[in-house]
Length: 278
Image (cartoon, rainbow, N blue to C red; front, top):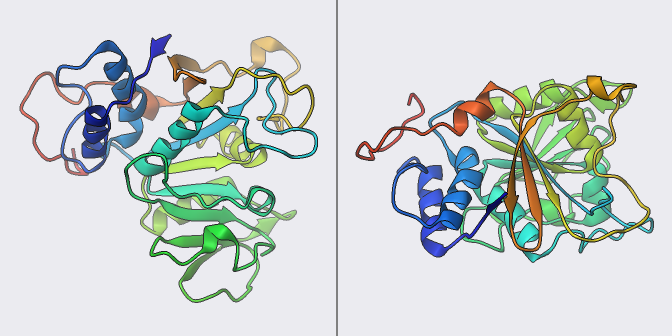
């Protein structure tokens, strides 16, 4: 397990990677600083095709909330900071309408430096009210993906897609968001939304942040829509393990894009501006 330390100079470097002004592979850093670059660099890079990463925070027994629905303190302080760092590195954060209604998230970056991502909710039936916290007008893009022709407040973008049995196809959602000019995306929750993208083969990375507490009952983090009968058929992604102090992050690679992103951009060559063409 690699122990992570996100010092100011490391985070400045990671934000420079996000801006296409630097790389995560060069420079002299301590071991824990290098681990931070290894963890966040693959998400921050802009010289590769846009990545889709999901993150979920859970307890030791795989719960994301209590039976009464309390989910606010599942992740420890560093687990929460990790989530905000991921938000700062992507173009947009995606959640399902159930999470938006239950948790009232703001989806802003508050625990680290960095830009706020576009806030996106998958809301097939148009249930989310315009005064929801994530739809607050603050200069950041707000996007509702829906199958319902419901009028929305000025400034809220609407992506209309067809629904099947009340559900939107994750592949069409992803294609539609890319069509709106969004690059790297974070699928933040809830578990059903993340599972939908996972089982559709649309995730490049899955990060599971585990906090040292046992809840005992309540909703699970990931519940497969198509569970396997035999362990030999289970998905076994390659995982890198990072210690964040209060939490442990399992960073799972789910496709060629994930493997490519952890390869060094260059080998001790002078750093120049990175373009989308590489």
